[in-house]
Length: 287
Image (cartoon, rainbow, N blue to C red; front, top):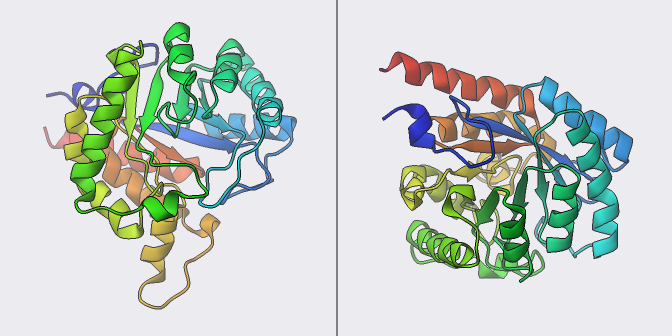
């Protein structure tokens, strides 16, 4: 099986011969990793273009923090934050993903040029999302999700996290397909850090080939997350700040790429772009 066939392809998006790199632009004042740095539209667009120059294949624009405990931003404010940035990047020829749980934001972002909808709730937060994406005929990320940020930590209870995430993702995929989104437009995401403790995230990373049994391309979004801070802290140490977890993120990107992930979502692009290219070279040499 070729690497490309092994990773899968997504209708409406380019085909890459390696794991793709999705760069993150958080247009928020309160993101866990870089809140406020790219809050201005002009600055956010420039940052997105910088990520492309560093090797990003896609740029994911979001206007609502989904860190544990975060409260939701209102719809008008999310639209104000997101749509001008999507429009600015798309006008420069960037492949833009919109990170939103609201159908209205997804619709307006697609109208502004977004080519992918990345909904961390997999369409559960807004009943209008699946019909909107089906009508727009754009790719859709179905992430494993058990509830909003305020309560998700209390839902991190599993007997077998890999089996349960697989089953819940499969059920969500079936519901999304029944709602009108064609299977060839779907991407799946195990939802690292969402209703999961560090051990759960590591177990899912250790079993990415099993997640690929869902039959759709796999997006891995580990960048700067708490479980990496836990790993780096060791025994009784203090976790390093989010922006000091980029080397660990690149390590996860290499692992995910080697295990057949379709794309990795990261804040710091350059090291991950190098990591996925090295992983691709090693795969090529093994044939």
